Amino acid sequence: MANNTFDFYDKTSLKSYNLDQTMRYQLNMLDSLDVFTRKHCENVANLTCRLCEYLHCNKSFTQYCTICAYLHDLGKLFIPANILQKPGKLTQEEYDIMKTHTTLGYNMCMKDLELRPYANGALYHHEALNGSGYPQGLTKKDIPYEGQIIRVADEYDAIVSKRQYKSHIGISETLKILIENTKPSKSEALNNIAQNTKLGKNNPVVVRTLFKVVIDDIGYEISLTQSYIDELKEHIKRLEQAQKYKEKMNNSKKEKDKSFYLEGIKLLLLKDETLENLEIIYQEYKQAYETRKKIIDNLYNEIKIIKKLKV
Image (tube, rainbow, N blue to C red):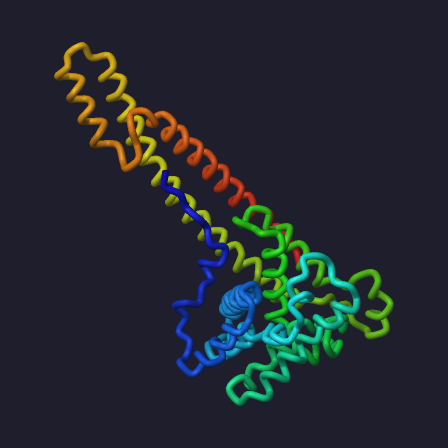
């Protein structure tokens, strides 16, 4: 039976994005990263590019910000594998080492003339508007815009990857986490009062823009799923016709009629489909059809939930 697979980031793929040839060197630096970090960097760059477009940034800034996002975790080249790939929670000591990837990436970029223009991605993507981020604990006025955008893309992809989403169903729960991080936490309330600020970690405008990106991508997933449903309907229709011929063949008394319907069935069946497994395959297509229909219903519901979210 035919099957479809959904690539969570296919809609935001930058394979066809018109990046200047001079940027190939920067992108090739990702080859040095482990496969998981590389994939994360690509995902964050994809999201960053889309965010910039929805934020109506000009093309030059969008390209610049996208490359910064590609390189944002370059410092993880220098983080020990037992910490970088640890499946469980990091100890405080391990976490302190992990946090150094920001300055390590920044220093690496600054030492290379080709990478130097994009060093901000590495240095600022973990800074928070309320001053609770690292490595410098900067507040909004001192955090470059590209850092604020990449932070949101980075956080979103980290949660998506951890929860291993295969579809956008339930993605609104991830967005709620990002919304919470636009608000000052209770533990920081006194500090916020002292600083005369009511900021959270994330830029609310960027988070709100992420909703548009996600809704657009859900629409794309719906379109892909609907195309597959249409294909399934054709297969179901084909197999129903084959079953009708089979029934008529079994009820025929003349060998000539039996042969006629058998030839009709053979014309309708595809590779690996036989008279014996016809019913099984038919039920598999029907089950796949019902499953995809439910997915589409859930995706439309997800859009409704996201549209009601407030930042």
